[in-house]
Length: 310
Length: 310
Image (cartoon, rainbow over all chains, first blue to last red; front, side, top):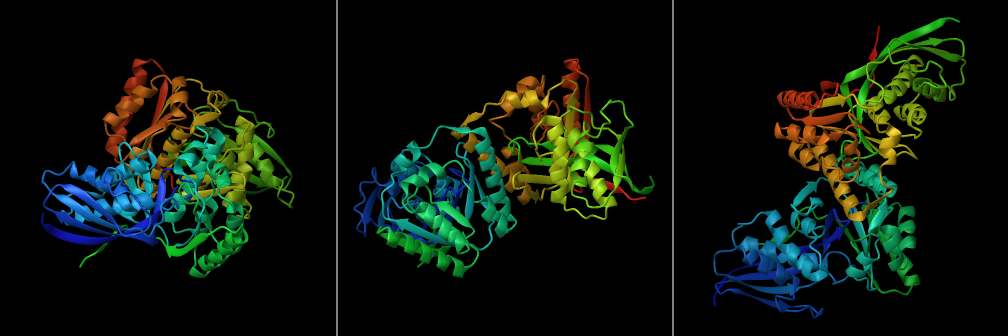
């Protein structure tokens, strides 16, 4: 087996749902990110090495990056293999797209080494196999922003229809309270039926959010960051949620909510200083609750997976 | 009583819902429109004259324009009255905002004569009283586009939050099959509960439509003109609906659906020639069904109520 070429990538964390866009909106952030080094080898097969302490499986059938790479390899006609080293910096289960970063980062890196033979939509399609392994469902609201960067709308999964939305500069404060919320639990507590009047309010808000992002209207973005369907149910699983949200808005945040299925909470701000104040409020809430936590102050990542060209 | 000043306005027809934007989207068209002449008089009270054959009530308490003007007058501190002559060209009950045109046209004309003392939001608020008289519900998805022009999003009614959306040039073909669909019937057949998965698909589509309009992406507009919740139920009330839709798309329409609560059907096209072909298809469908009908080939009205300054 000989090594043909190597690339190192940074695969960013992502915030799915974006409050009123359950299952269809997501955005990438500049921090945290996973570091992945992928080497193309001339022998079929995938080997995975972990350089972190999360004890994730290295069997490619059980590793989300492996599942994504396998999907990509099925559409290759040349006999190549991959050697992948993952340094995970996005904590699994934190609700900021840890599995998506691994899946998306792996196939984006592979495509780079193969001479960009696949489209970004193809990469999303491959990476969704990692999400299926992680949560049982093929969803793209973390994968798509991780690969495309920025804010993305997944209008439809079958067929895949991804739209990049322009957005003004936004600062993002994320707190990860270290409690466990399983994606499957967060999904199972949702009602399968909702009131039409609530659904109307939700699609008024998502329309307002998309318009606000594209018109760079911060006030409209803030007014539209309202979720009358999912947040009232899911936020019960996250201690301190209401307090974080209320205190963040008091210090000037535009709004925010649960990141993906939680437990992380994100808040958007127009200015860095406000994002810092939001972080202080989050800190105060979880210190008083005696819950271990991590806080990130970051911005929207407009490029998606970053390639560290040697 | 002495006449102080007079204005004639054209109050445009409007298409509410716009397929996937039930209760929150609407747009104004250049044809048809109502012609309304309003005179400011120095004696409180409202007199209404009809110059058409629709036999609408002239009692201001029972006329939608009267109800709208009364709401406006309640916020006036000066003792004035109005004399209104309506030449209705938008057939009542056709589903293209006939009552909204009367209500919006009346208060827009009044505001003009009063020196524009009210905001456009105020006018929407007043005109919704006409809608309440017509249908029992204060809704703004015809009123707002009639007053603002273009495509409007009503993100919220209480508090009122109206957003003007930019849109590329679009040709609109409207057919009004002369059957009766009462707004109250069209509303009562809707289920109060919907499946969350259908609601998600709907808000993916409205987000796609708003993005498509603002990005001037005709393909995306077309793909997003899908309604999985309301149209399947309401279209049953409109003979020929499926055939009109299918044949319109075959000749190149981007898409379309029920206008408001029907029975009118609208189709959007990128080019005039396609809008003409769509009209021919509509014509063929309703001729074969032996249903009387009117067809309009028009464009989006970006100005709203038009003031014919003498």
